[in-house]
Length: 524
Image (cartoon, rainbow, N blue to C red; front, side, top):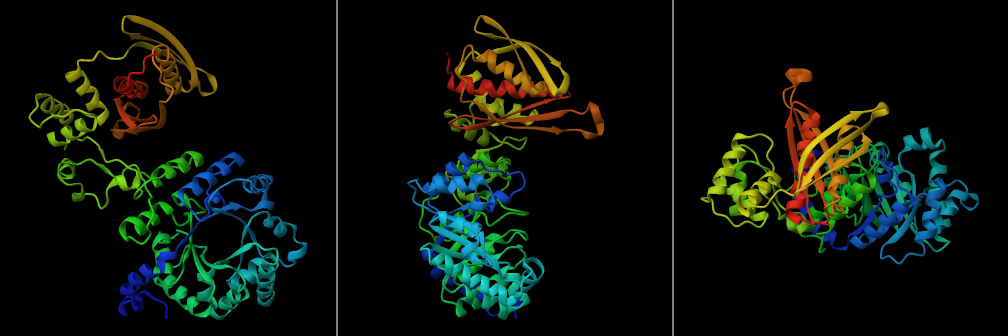
C-alpha cells in the first residue's frame, strides 16, 4: 500500500528526517534552467544568454548544468561547441531521448558534443503504447541499446526515467524492468514529470527502487501540486543523491523544483549542506532579469517581501530582536531587512528607518514625532519619503531640482511627447523627449534634463504599477502609482496618488530621482 495513513502511522516521518541527514552528505546538484527552465511560456534564451548563465551557475557551485538539446536548433548546437572551450567548474550535459537505431541516429550522435549526456526514456506503459507507439519490449531494448551506445563513446550517461511515478503506480514490474535496462547508466533519475505525485508516494517508491537497483539514484520533480521541494526531500530521505531543479522554479506548466526554496531549507534550516549560499538572491535576480519572468513578491527566501515588515507591532518587535518575526536572518541569503510604512507605524519604526539611512535619533526627537504624525495622517508614504523629510528637516539641504512645468502631447500609435522645464540652483533648463506613452516620455524628458547637471546613468526603473483606490467612482477614481528604482547599491520605491494617473506618475518619478540625488548627489 502506498498512502498517507501508512506513511504517518508507522512513524516514517521520524525515519524521513533521520534518513535525510544520512543521505544528504553526498548530494549532487544538477541544474536544468537552460533546458527545462526554457520550457516556461515566454522565456527564450539567446546564445549569449546561455553562455553567461552557464558561467553564473557554475560560479555558484552547481555540479552539472544541462545546456539543451543540440539537434533541436542551431543555437544549442553552437552553444555546446562554445562551452567546450570554457574553463568552468561544472560539467555541462546535453539532453536527448532514447533511439531505435542509436548508431544511425544523427540527433543522438549530436549529443556526444558534451562530456555528459542525459537521455530520457519511457517508464509508463501508457506512454510507451500511446505516445511512443512501440511495444513494451521494444521500449526496454531502446533504453539499454541507447545507453550502451553512448557509454561506448566514453561519455558519462545520466538516464532520466520519464513519468516514473505515474508508471510505477500503473505497472510496477514493468517500471522496474525499464530501470534494469538502464543498468549501465552512471545515474538513474526518477522523474515526476506530471508533478502529481504526493510526498509519501515519492518516499515509498524511491525506497522500493533503492532496494532493486544499485545505480546512483536521482530525483526530478515538477511543481503541479506545489510539492516539488518536499517531494525532493522525500526522495533524498529514501536514497536519492542526484538532485535536479531550476532557478526561480522555471519550467513548463507550474515549473520545476526551485533551488531558491530547496537550498535555503537544506542549508540554513536543516544544516544538511555545508555551503555558503549568500549569493543565491543575486543569482535569482540575475535569472529574473535574463528571463523577464518575475519572481513572486511573496516567494520564500528570495521574494521582495520575504524580509519586509509593515505592521507597527511587528516593526517594534523586529527592532528589539529580529527572531521575533523572522525564522532566519536575511543576511544569510545576501538580503536586507526592509520596512514598509503604514498608518500603524510607531515612532520606533521611524527611528529604525532613520537609522537605515544613517540618522541616529531617539523616539522623543521632535522630528521623529512630526514624521510619525505625518505618516499616520497621510496616504502613500514609503521609507523614501521619510528619508527626504529627514534630509529636509535635519540637513537643511536644498532640493536637487524642482519640476516647474510640463506638457504632454499624445501622438498616434501610442507615442507621446513631453516638454518640460526644471530648475537646478538658479538655472532653468527646458527639455523634451518622445516615448511610448505619456509616462515613458515624461521619464525620458526628466532624465534628459537632469543629466545636464547630474550623473544618473546607474539609475534604472525596474517596476511600474497602478492601483485603483476607489473603484466605485469608475473613471473618476483616484489611482496610486508605485515605481521601483534601482542603482548598483540599493533598491527604493515611491508612491504617487492622484485622481489623474499622469499627475500620480509625475509625483512618484520626481520623488524617485529626488531620493537618488539627495542621497548620492553626483553632480556633473
